[in-house]
Structures are given as C-alpha cells and as structure tokens.
Image 1 (cartoon, rainbow, N blue to C red):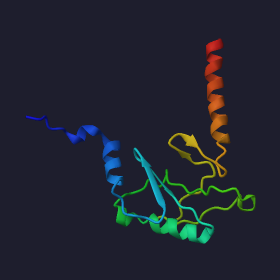
Image 2 (tube, one colour; image 1 turned 180 degrees about the vertical axis):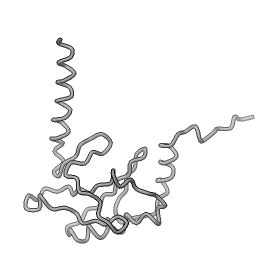
Image 3 (cartoon, rainbow, N blue to C red; image 1 turned 135 degrees about the vertical axis):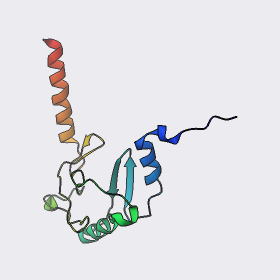
Image 4 (cartoon, rainbow, N blue to C red; image 1 turned 120 degrees about the horizontal axis):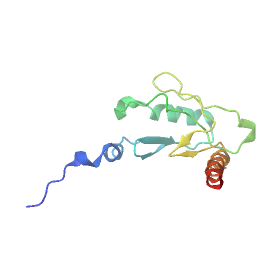
Length: 135
C-alpha cells in the first residue's frame, strides 16, 4: 500500500507557490517566489502603466492581503528626464510608498538595473568579514 503524503509538511512557501500558481490572469506579469510576489508591466505611457498596475493590484479577486510595510512601487527605465518620476499606483484606495532602491529576493535594485547599491553593500559586507580574518 503506498504511503500517503502529508502536504502540510511541505511548508508555507510551497503552499503559497501552489496558491499563486493559480492566480487570475492579469495584464501585468506576476512573478512569485516563496512568499514574495512582484507585478511587472511595460508600457510607453506612464498613465497606462499606472492604470494597469492599479487594476491588477485589486486584491479582492486574489483573496490576498498585502503587507503594506513591504509593498512598494518602482519604475525601471533609462530616461534621465524622468529620473525622479514616481508611480501613482493605488492599493486599496491609497498609494503604496515609493522606494527608489527596493530589495527583491535579497537583491537591491535601482532605476537603471545597474545593481550599484547592491554591489556596494555586498563589498562592504565582504570587507568587514575579511577584516575580522586579519585580526
């Protein structure tokens, strides 16, 4: 007789991945890993992008509750004239905070995806640990 598997042993990240694997279709792409979920949308128009992201963040259809403290908005682009531009996306009738350097899966991102802030922090961390070895 085959042994029955207890799916509760898979843990919360696995259950979450199963759940988000069946999310409703959205105009923007959604990427999830463990308990992190990212929405990405590309458009030439800022207003179209903001409208699509606001519509896709309608949590009533997803039956999810976002952590307001962890939810941020960011636009990746190379247009220096719009460098200070912040997205006006609404989440449950209020805008989530803008973060110029959000961290996703442990990687600090920037507007141009140069990873400069991430590499600087990583170098400082390695340097500090290297100094401990020389003492």
